[in-house]
Amino acid sequence: MSKDLEFILKEGAREIGVFLTQEMIQMFFVYLKELKEWNQKVNLTSLKRDTDIIIKHFIDSLSLVPYLPSKATLLDLGSGAGFPGIPVKIAKPSLKVTLLEATRKKVNFQRYLVRRLGLTHIYSVQDSAESLKSEEESHLSFDIITSRAFSSLEKFLTLGKPFVKKGGYLIAMRGRHAEEELKDNQDVVKDLSLEISRKVELLLPVHKDKRYLIFIKKR
Image 1 (cartoon, one colour):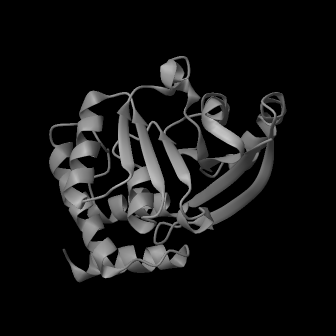
Image 2 (cartoon, helix red, strand yellow):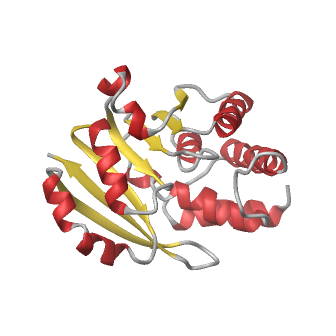
């Protein structure tokens, strides 16, 4: 993989407070290669350029890392091609990560990639949040719930709340309209007995797209 791409990944991660070892960088390049190859048969991402995948998928996912406690349990709802769960696991190996995804082909990719990278304590579950919370496994609970999949903040909070431990956090990864979304969902937050704990604003490198991490605590 080119030195230019390695520089973008390493320095882009550093800009958001994540320091990648050479081994981690190599794992991301394996991820990139496998993602592009599988994407020819399975719809995993609409992004085609290596730079876009590195910035908009890998580094965007890594923005969570500086705010996650070591050895926490994390659930990634609607994980798709593994974002943000797998990048987070690569950069913070001490986490225990569960990827929840309803589409079999995407779950197959996740499981293949996890084996290919030699990651441990990361699990891929084929199911949806809607059905899982009403099934036998609904007793599952995690320190952190996050997702990049949901179009609305309300849906993320409603589906994510049953899986977060008391005192744990839902971390919403939102775009430039996050402030408006928060205002529009004040009643939802209150009705679900949640509270906004923290809001982090950041810019993705190169593209300078605005992102927000919204920390919502379960009381």
